[in-house]
Length: 190
Image (cartoon, rainbow, N blue to C red; front, top):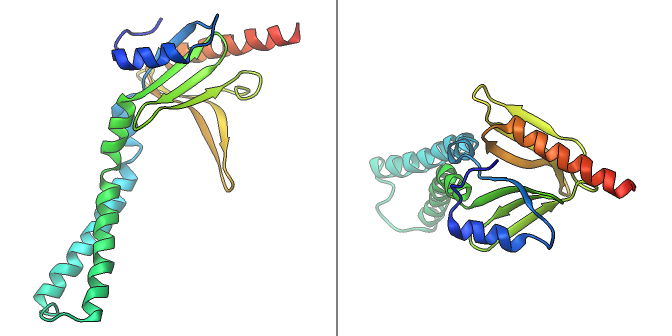
């Protein structure tokens, strides 16, 4: 039911996360293109920031205000450098999201849903049907791919949907997740 295009180190990582008597029902990875496209707004904001910083430097050179060193010049350079640095970092967001997608694993096992990010270290997020997977939301594109949201991440000032982003055949994955959830909840009631 799942493609075999998962890189061997990621396959090993997923196998190591399995508990005894737990089997994989589905596994996949996010679409890198889809993950990168979610950062387009940050990229444009970064472009505006970097452009402002570049414009400030060019304007200063044209007006010949950068002829001698002063405290005002130092503060201006720090301010402008911050704009360029922040802008550059924001413009890299789609590239970083693309890279993160290649190192992310989504899985549904017989007991839980997993999101694993193997970037600098290994971050494993586990979602149990009795605690986390209560409502399932599907966002489906015309080609059948989409997002499957099934849990919430509560931080001190916001609530974020959590799930599988940019997966192919999202409807089939939703059916697998809901079946796993229902079977586990029924087993708890026995």
